[in-house]
Each structure stands twice: as C-alpha cells, then as structure tokens.
Amino acid sequence: NKNVVILISGRGSNMQSIVNANIIGAKIVAVISNRPDAGGLAWAQERGIATAVLNHRDFDNREAFDAQLQQVIDAYQPDLVVLAGFMRILTANFCLHYQNRMLNIHPSLLPSFKGLHTHQAAIDAGCKLAGCTVHFVTPELDHGPIISQGAVPILPDDSADDLAARILTVEHQLYPQAVADFVTGRLSVQDGKVINAQPTDAQNKL
Ligand code: GAR
Image 1 (tube, protein in one colour):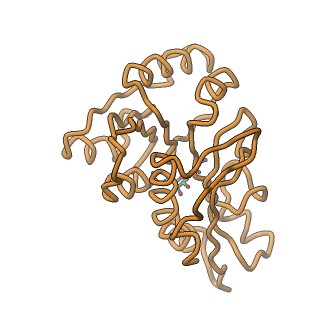
Image 2 (cartoon, protein in one colour):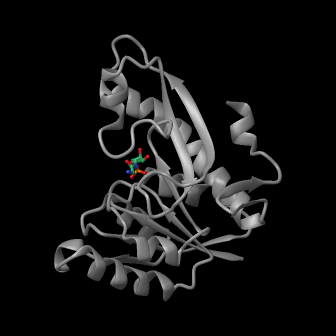
C-alpha cells in the first residue's frame, strides 16, 4: 500500500471523494487541517482516519509553519501528499521536499485564473468554459505539471456559487482518478513532464 496524507482547510468534499473511492493500493493515513474548524476533520474521524490540526495562526511566519507541518506529515511516512482545498501558500522548501509526490486541485483551467476567486474571475472575463485542474505541486503557485483537466460551460445567469458547484462535481471525478493512477505507478512526473502510461477513465469520459 502507498501511504496518502490529505491536507484540507474546509469542508473537505474532495477529501471525501478520495476516501469514498476506496482506491486499491492507497491507504489514507491522515487528514491534516490548518484550521481547527474544518468540517472535513469530523467526517474523517468518524471513519477512523487519523486527523491532526496545525493552526497557522500559532506560528510567526510561513517558514516556521511549513517546517512543523512537514514534521507532522512525515510522521505518517507518506508516499503521496494530496492538497484538497488546502488554502495556504506553501514555501519553496516545503514544495521541494514533496517534489513529484504532492498533488493539488485548482478550480480553474490553468494557466488561467491562478489564486483565489477563480469562479467570479472566469465569469467576469466572459469565459464560456471553466473547469478544474489536477497538477503536481511546484514552488510556483498553481503552476506545476498538469495531470488532468475537466471543463464545464458557464451559463448566462451563473453566479460564482452556481459555477463552483458545477465544477466541483468534475473535481470529484478527476481527483480520485489521479490518486489511483499515482499509487499504481501509472502516473508520475519526470523532468517536469507528466508521464501517464494509461490516460485516466475519468479524463476520457469528459
Ligand atoms: C475546491 O473547489 C478546490 O478546488 C478549491 O477549494 C475547494 C475546496 O473544496 N481549492 C482551491 O481553491 C485551492 N487554491 P473542498 O474542501 O470541499 O474539497
């Protein structure tokens, strides 16, 4: 089994989709939140998954927080770290420590709309399509090698919440598939390029 540590900051619906997928070869060894009130923590606890909280407000700076977070994560000996709505910018040292073994999901079609408020930004730009991106994490924010993307239409009267909900259903398909592909070894990254020996079912269906 490959050990998977999932980092969350909120409700954790992506974390739930990964846990619920019962991925063969993946053991979810811990769910870690930077926010004590993250809804996803209770959900994980109810399923017997180890949880931990590391409140970023208890630290003077990003470096100190990330160094401690790395210690907490590494105690679980992860083969893969999964950022699932983890709303902290991570230091370069932290990103490099988990190079080629840390995934993120971002609610836009990267490289468009990095950062926050992606749904409103896509609506404001007059885009007709929006979506989500699963990628390996590199020190540059929302910028690493792309594993998979899913697109949805932006409809004329969409609010940001409408669009977020439409994209979220796609997130819940793509993220478990990427984790499954990684733990089987089909998916990796070499020289900054994604190798996916067998393109994912979820990607092909879109
Ligand atoms: C998801 O839409 C995810 O793509 C996004 O936050 C939401 C978390 O929802 N992530 C980011 O914006 C990362 N910068 P969840 O807690 O229900 O998975």
